[in-house]
Length: 271
Image (cartoon, rainbow, N blue to C red; front, side, top):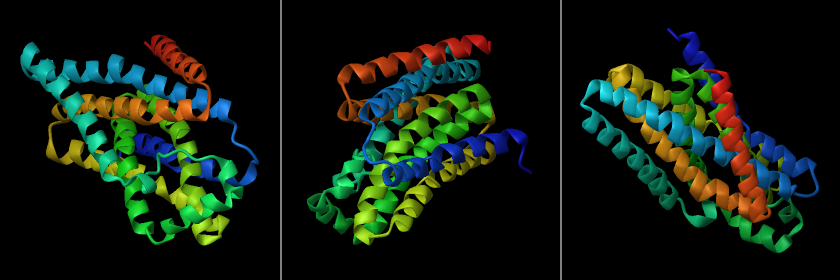
């Protein structure tokens, strides 16, 4: 029996994942990449995720684990889970070859660059590897959205929006090489759109872990810090470097500060 909390959390995860289709559509219906907007948006997304990770998810995980264990042991478990999350995100990133990495940023202008097109054609032969790479990257993001939303709706909404913003340029990065490999905009859009399904799969994995294998408080106590670690790594390793690549360094930092500030005041409003 699916509860209303499960349905809402899963819907938010699906929204975040399938926003890759927005990036794909932008690649085909706009002529130039709005680099300033993307730079601010990616910085904003990183700010939201970093702020939530340290002030909400890590702290909530510590609180739950301290209730189950001693204060010292609970904090030790929470901090360990946080760094394990960072390590897992880094490991996944290392397992993905550079050329197939869906988080390597691309520009819409590449569609008119024939030399770039030739370089990207090999992705057709490596389609299975690319699909697995996209899935590996998106699984922890889906887990992050779902775990947050099923425990705290306002956190889930904030994370879903942050990841959705992150997935728009990812959709561009996926659609450009597939378009040049197949010559079909429809296929490029389809694969970009469907790649986001890895995130609701991550949500289902999270549900299975929470609902079937562990006590809910115990599972949440470990998952919250681990997910916080995943989000901090994604922000520092992918979002901020991409934001700087797309635009000016200061714009990405302005976006980051704005994301933190808006997230902070929105949490105060919902107290």
